[in-house]
Image (cartoon, rainbow, N blue to C red; front, side, top):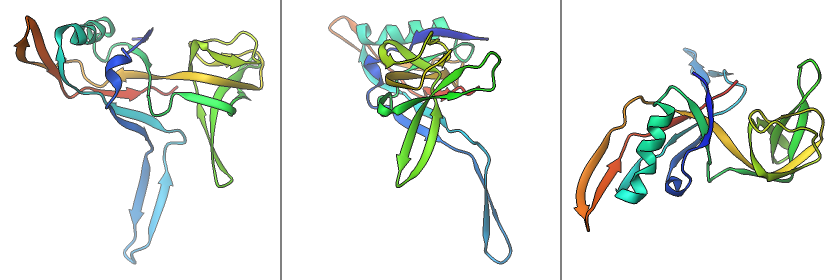
Length: 189
């Protein structure tokens, strides 16, 4: 399936657990030495966005969203509150191998002289300042440009096709519900 250019509701995403991850193979020899193979060049985010008890009005957007994206079928935007913006100097454009030539958005992380470049594919329209020409907000690709700053989303999908919510109680005429086991995974490529 494909991408739906909609964002998972940002109100209930406080308290999520997760973030970037890598895949590294570690091999131990009989002598006790170890060798590590960096399998993934880029990180992949993974989050558990389980929701504790919510009253009806606060819960209703969640099953509606789940149905619209049909579980794992469609990918969507997600705001990772722990890393959703690039400050001046962190947001750059790098050349791609595309023809005609294009520029891809990245966020550059720097620590003690070392850098890591994260590809940004979902800039937030209206929340970006850039010198780029014709920025595509669905891919993070521009015809030209050198720098940008502002907000971006993660491109994700649910890691389940089943919504397992639990009706806890009724409070003042409203149903009280929790939804656990909600895992989302970042899409690369």
